[in-house]
Image (tube, rainbow, N blue to C red; front, side, top):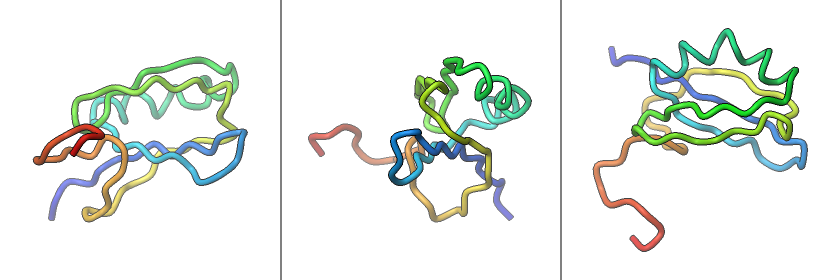
Length: 89
């Protein structure tokens, strides 16, 4: 069985679909205990994504956030891609 992938799910104050980021294992472990504090304080954090990049999250614009497990076949922000990167591909 493959290792489970952790995701950060953000519901923004502006509404719309939630943003889903695939986190690195280290980042998910680090973020889990700090998530309530970041939400309460409206802090900014830059978690590392599974593909090695980072994303800056301003929790002042987030209504609710949680960590969850991603199914193996799902592709979201930060999912490693063996192909080309960028908008021009």
